[in-house]
Length: 292
Image 1 (cartoon, rainbow, N blue to C red):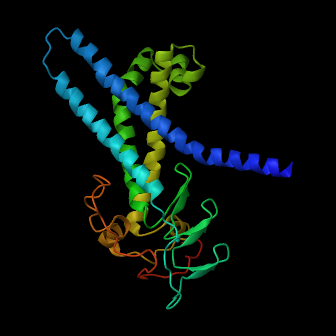
Image 2 (cartoon, rainbow, N blue to C red):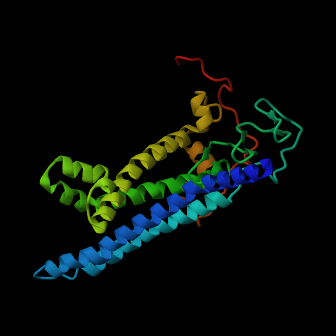
């Protein structure tokens, strides 16, 4: 009985771990499909209503389709590389000689670990230059996959901003009657309103775009700030900046030598200057006192 319960719990835990990834994938492709519908179906209706067609629609559609699938491709590719690039100490020769201040011993991994490395109890392994465990991708953000995580966030933010702008007409149609209880409920909780499936889908995706944009904006701007300061999330909470290399140095250490190009595509090679083990100390390793 205990064995069966343990197996069932393990399966539920596995499903719950991958559920955010599945939901993210469904939402990304649903939003892309809805915006494609607006471009391919709704826009031609506007041209049909125009008494003097100008021929701009084909160029307009081509531009929008190219833009949205460029962003979708970057989101998917960066997400795939982020998930499949291991940031852990597995397969990394850490060495034992010359250990300086900042090295620790992990009793779980039974190994000495370098500065900025810490154990993740979700991944069950130590992660080089660990920033945090991303529950949306079920993967730790670390030294080798930080670039893909940040670029994925960037294109998710751009895609959601684009989708919000494209869905502006949905909000205008709903608010034509003014700020009535009906319009507010339709905007905020469309699933409890007695609306057609088409109206529900548009209102639901438009709401999802707005909420998603707010959340992703907060994540993106926070991590851009950390990148520019040369900090990890853990170092931010302890108010330390012991490894900051200045603005350009922090960009190179976070995104690689081609930091100014790597955000365009994950295909752009941008080798990192370090090894994730040795870091130049430029400040105090001790946490700042309270009330700084």
